[in-house]
Amino acid sequence: MLHFQARQRLRRQLETLRPELYRLAWSWCQNAAVADDLVQETCLRALERADQLRDPARLKGWLVRILVNLHTDLLRQRRETEDVVELPCCAGNEPDLSAERQDTVQRVRQAICRLSEDQRRVLTLVDLMEMSYAEVAEALDIPIGTVMSRLSRARRRLRLLLQSEMETTAAPTRLRRIK
Image (spheres, rainbow, N blue to C red):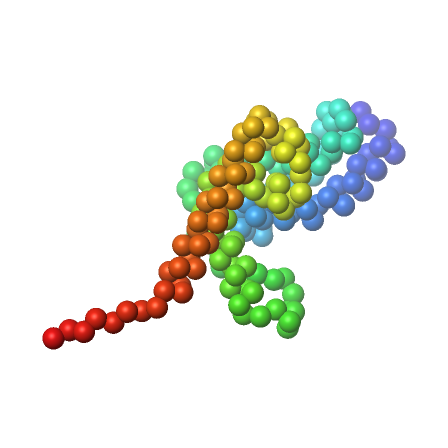
């Protein structure tokens, strides 16, 4: 069992990483309450199993792995999909954000939700959490080549979804003359 100072250090590190873990969990489930529960359970398990952390320098990856496992368990329990909750794109009331920017953010979020779970995880870990491919591979327990191919496919699919969305919303309505 960890001695008191090591446990306190771990608690401080968890407090520091908690916002990042929450953003990641929210990006996966799009539900604030579920994301908060996942992060809370992640922190609890990390504290309970702190002696299993072999390399303190890899704390972030270890926590992400716990979060991935908890999220996977949650998906198994539910077995049904939830509708994407329409949430405002910004937490604060920042007047400088235009409606166009909010619309763009919402479209990107919706497109990300349409990715497969595997692609969404890799994309959010690399682009949101700024983890290296090696860290993602370790956290998801997959080969680094799989990380790279999933990320490539996710970005390509995201680009296609967004382009398709832009074409359908930007296409002018054509009227036909009826006799």
